[in-house]
Length: 375
Image (cartoon, rainbow, N blue to C red):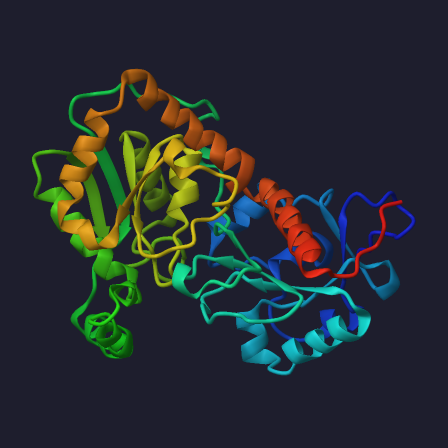
């Protein structure tokens, strides 16, 4: 176990982590990778490359086995993994937080989107729904590689404004009949609730939204849509059809050669494409499915993206066309630069922990958590 000693100058956040937790089965939290080793699955090579090339910033936080030296308790597994392998661990960490007077930090960066209502705790999450969000949730993006550095030499090419906007999408956007039926049955309670409260219509598989968006874009003369709807997810070697690196380059090249990138939720109410599009300096067209936009308290999404309500998907081509037409050449160029800046300053893995630590400290101050005094 790598430990940041309490005698060091305290300008980073120290998490208490019991060394015995490292022996428990199951993949531990991404936040522990810099200290306990990278457990990225070989089946997800692009996230593994991202974390190896742009590791989480250890200047922002550390871990300790000394409760007296710690600022907060960190549950060593994500909520999803803890629920599967260690169902009593969350209660154990809550009790430790209560008895020590320390803030509790939970890695919620998985597919579980159950709202948390825990006292004296911060939950780091992807996505979720605005109408279910608690005040202590911290919203970040799934970790994505720097595609501009990896494939385009690291130099942003600003596209000149054309009369007709071009928009790309390459990815999983085809449902088999059996998967469609299973998804509809699983989502039935929320679909029925959606007749009363339209916000609940967002609680369905992202491929349904992708299909609608692609139908509208591909049928419209108002935009130049460059789309490839794949039958499977191509970010994993378990599901990709064909060579995974060839599929990746096709994804990158198509996006890089367009003005805008379509960004639609996946199985969870989040998408890695936000980071991938902005990392390439392209303007994301975000289909808003009541998502908590990551880093939304610090990033102004109007500076680098177009956000479109999911209830207006059939009008997407007209909305994009009019938005593009109203931008000056200079504004269009600046939005591309702003997109790249947003990725580097917040979304790239090496930038995420700076934001997370700021937000944890804000939660600690708001909740009156015990905290060590900086030496």
